[in-house]
Length: 350
Image (cartoon, rainbow, N blue to C red; front, side, top):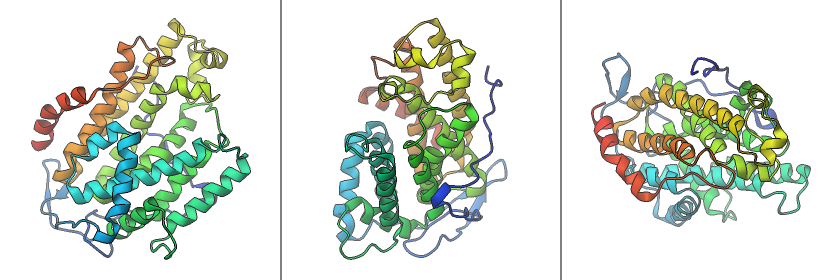
């Protein structure tokens, strides 16, 4: 079944109204406290690919910005236990920056998800998102800026030289949720997953350190796999809002019409559909896994943990009898901790 769908579809051509030309990929992604990314000595792996060997220490943010970063930590700790679990495995400076990145993503997403609850029409929600995008694009926020996430995100972008084009692409994906509630094909959904998740993986690499040229395609696949896992876990919650992310072509393949999904019909057709999508996600996780060896050594365990925890959600969906309408698949803290010894062993040998 794993060969019945493409897993290396073309990337999006642009980012609609916020599009910028993507930056030329750096030959190597490694970072200092200030200034642009700079190459550091590298050693070849068995496959001949360079990997960071002795990165320069990355200091924590300036003390004045630590309250802003602390606010980012609280946001992620509250809203994404799985990601917070994985981020804690990073060295403190990288952990701090990654939490700022995900807080920026979280607040951007909430602007759109909560627009209807605030009584905003689509046009008003788009203006609100555009205003937020302008605030977050400033590398040096004005003195009157008080939003902690804006301050921490600007500092993270400055210190790790994260390209604005990737943030623009993510915001274009977030904006899609204002006007798109159905995806006709897997190719259409791929574009959405790339924008809202694969861009995050690429931005994360500017923080973790990686052989960018070799690692980027792995990061893209991991991002799509993570987002597809979220979609599968949240089928019921999204249906309650009238959203169907699963490709309509896939629903038709299994004779399961959209009205049945919106009604929460759990039958053999739906089980077959979910098995198909879960196999697709697992194929993407398998394709992405070799990319972990291309990250800086002190970042591998955290990324491996994030990938493994999310992949395990697929097994929980199966264990729940594919009931994603009344049950939300998740891993307990103990189950997450139980994954670490093997992951540490695997990543330490890379």
